[in-house]
Figure 1: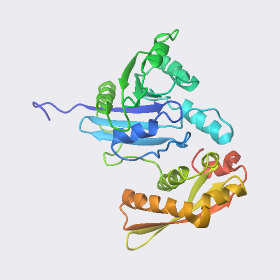
Figure 2: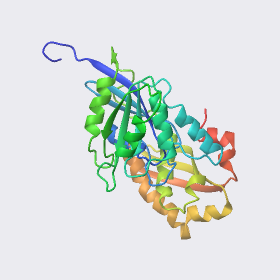
Figure 3: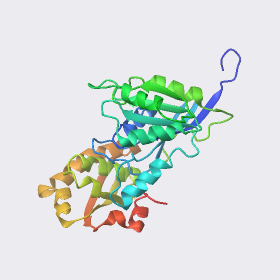
Amino acid sequence: MEDGKQQVLRAAMVAVVGRTNAGKSTLVNRLVGEKVCIVSGMEQTTRNRIRAFLTEARGQLVFTDTPGSHKAENELGTLMNRMARSAGQGADALLVVIDGTAPLRQEDEGWLRRAGRAECPVFVALNKADAPGFDAAPARAFWEALPERRAQARWLEVSAATGAGCEALTDALFAAAPEVGALPFPEDIVSDFPRKLAIADIIREKLIGRLFQEVPHQLGVRVERIEEGADGSWVVHATLLVNRPSQKGMVIGNKGRTLRAMRRAAEPEIAEAYGLTACKIVPFVRVEPKWFRNHFILKDLGYVD
């Protein structure tokens, strides 16, 4: 209540799109103030569509973080691209994230073309504004040269790593959000991502940085069950899927070192995220040739409905 007037509530579904490894997940985590999406330097880290919620006195922003667009090499890649392309459907705003330190790629140009045809407000976040080599000019020049561009765009330079420019981005998104009579989602949730899938993502994130280049793209994690102890602890049983027998040894590591490192990193993060007294991960590495082409396994991992 301000000057006797009721606080105006605004809410918007914001589709966060862009090429893989542009910093979308890091930006979403920064905007909502908590870690919702897994992050790594490896491309194609995000595989699911994840909704993250920012709720303030002025309203609610619902960010849909999607897999980055990339050249698909299997059914999993095709599904990820399909999810990315459909992200803007039904959104109140489209947020295109571009890595301002990298040359403009074909995927960046594709998203800018789609944004130019959008019927909702468009925002372009030029990420990594604090990093050496940042240059906003190529993306802006491409946008201005687009033929038959219907949409206008609000351009903002941000750093998902430091938070620079993120407050201005949040303000701009709220200003463009439609007025609502009530919040569309409960104010006390940060994400509606299913618990098992969220835990599987944490486990996969901790393994990605410790594996050779080809393994992360052929690694799947499935949480089979969670045993909840009376003392507030969890035992998480997880299956780690790999494509070839040689990858099994890489995931386990010499004398189990890779799995131990994963557990040391993932267990306290899961415990903190869910308010546990302790968390123990029991991993089992299984060879499942071409699992990423198996529709039933992809469905079990939450990649398809």
